[in-house]
Image (cartoon, rainbow, N blue to C red; front, side):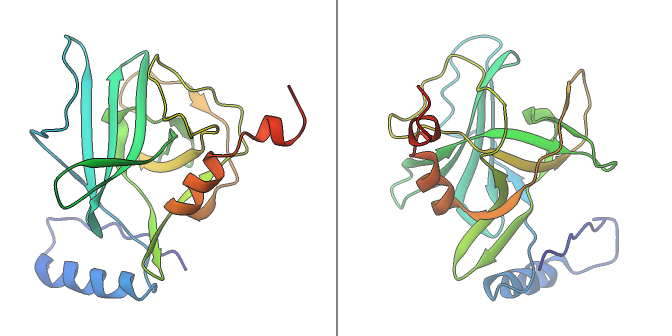
Length: 195
């Protein structure tokens, strides 16, 4: 069950109590909501050149899970990572971000346009809305992990704030991050017999 939660922080609400309630409910799998929390001054920022952007968020429901988009306007890398006890970042998988705006239109997922990530938690696993059925191409010149052969499109919530190109609609499914990584390790073209 997905319940979109959009509250104004201007309301007279005890946010500590609300976070506790949401965390309790999501751990039981009853509510699916996540709020991306921006990470500032990350030690993981690998941008060393002028014009390089680096955006990092953690999931409020599990701060060890990080979303990172880094690179340039004309080519960036998007990935989910898990931070271990030593502060090291382990790649979960790379993906193609698409945002859905309040009108239901899809746009390319630039870091400055992303506002939230729908998440569902069930059996201690984090689920996001994603699909491998798309014709998107990865952009940029980054090198994905050798094990990753396919790249899912992942749905975010956001608003187009600058130039952007409209994207098609997708049939997103709730998929656990571990399941996404497993499916991403299979080269579908070779599996289907195409060269």
